[in-house]
Length: 214
Ligand code: FE
Image 1 (cartoon, rainbow, N blue to C red):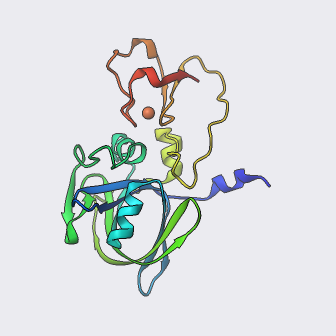
Image 2 (cartoon, rainbow, N blue to C red; image 1 turned 90 degrees about the vertical axis):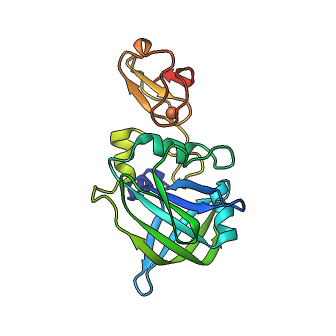
């Protein structure tokens, strides 16, 4: 079977928000939010069990979806996609507001947000599929929603290992000008040696030392 055909499925990029037992806002990036029915407005969201956010949603039975746009700061994707809410306050350097039920939604460079009430949970192995009714919405910035394809082609990011679409890196073609972040896959093209020593990956904020030549 040629699994590369699956790479042609289209996705967006979203921050799923919830809160933990201490009322601390938590969140993670997903690329799988689908509207599955119209009446009522119902969505399905697939979240990896390894994500702290997944366990918080299971306790809370509510979550938010912030729809990222092409203008979303790559650092937001790095923070929410490549770190864990167990270790990091992902909202510390991110503009957000708390809506009803103390749930966080992003307030900059989002194409709107949804508040969702979980109706069903389906165990799909590595991931849990939440089926949820949309009970509140908020408008966003009017910017173009970011597709997963745009993220790959323009921002050149890779999927975190917890994403359903994650695929292990292949041997990259040799290009002496391109350096690849070993954590998030961000590609830097240019004079890497000339970058200051305290330069960090714009996606995952890791230091130069995690980069390797492509
Ligand atoms: Fe990185």
